[in-house]
Image 1 (tube, helix red, strand yellow):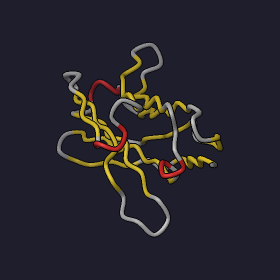
Image 2 (cartoon, rainbow, N blue to C red):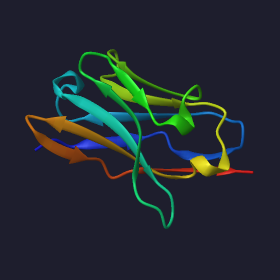
Image 3 (cartoon, rainbow, N blue to C red):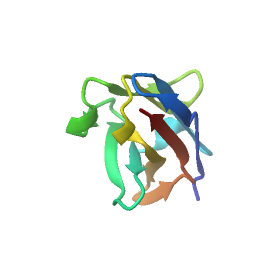
Image 4 (cartoon, rainbow, N blue to C red):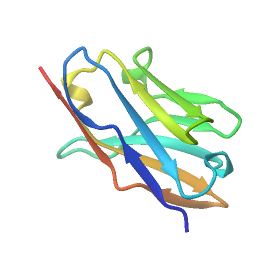
Length: 115
């Protein structure tokens, strides 16, 4: 069993920045990949960004150029740096990790962007 814990959410004005972190109960480098998802009220959960153990990154089109996913080897976390935030970025953000073929989710952290 792997536990994932997100942190860093909050309330920010449009144009502002937030940095989310995902910590794991095992070495973050043991996960095959880690993804950040978000779910806005009344909408389906969507993949925002993903990073593989090899360091490959992918982003949904709506956040390209604004969000950056990275692994912080010092903290042992996978971070999501979110810049130029828009009201439509509002939602609960979840970290997902895959370990030995099993999928694990964190409890989520709320991001609210005011206009």
